[in-house]
Length: 281
Image (cartoon, rainbow, N blue to C red):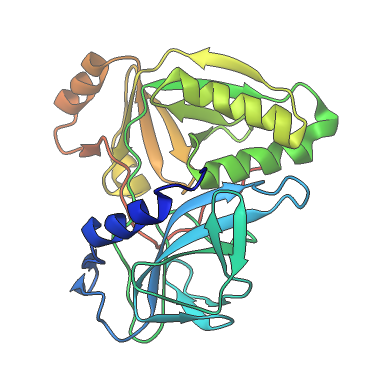
């Protein structure tokens, strides 16, 4: 009786579910019938199998046909990547697969190659619109009080950043190496500390910071370099090395824009692939 009605439900679910649709890219809207293979990384998950400390990239096949061990191009890095050991995952069940088609989701081992928002493809260069990071409202410095756990701390922070569990920023002062966690809600901080403790064996200390507004600088460091003085503003860099301005409140942000009308700020991190994440430590 435990499976009563499940097959019937799934059959109707497939009937009513949306079919694969077009995706926005640098080539315009790409239909699922596009002949070349392309896929989009929408999720990363570390330690799904605690015994093996694996890292899995979840990829939606957008166009074409996926085949095991095929070699594809990685849009963000420009490198070639061989897609080995593909899996189909359902809850705790895993099943090896040899092929997949538009609309399917596959899991691939991720040795640090993939990031959320990445595009992989064959044929003409293709890059789908990435997933933006929205402006956080809570900020805190994360400290590791145990120097002997330095490597575990760095690994844990890096892998949780890749997953998108929290945004990571760093001071532009090279003497300050502790990461700055940036989140929308307090729960994100608690999740990060819990997972660092339980999955990486690292206890951490969280020091809250008095900021509530973050803005990315349109034009990057070059545009910021044209500003001579900024008051009530702290400059940090995100995991992609881009400048971010932190403010205690909206009033301070608006005051800076009034003092420097040519400065353009964005509440959403720009989505592009010309940079690779900053490796701290």
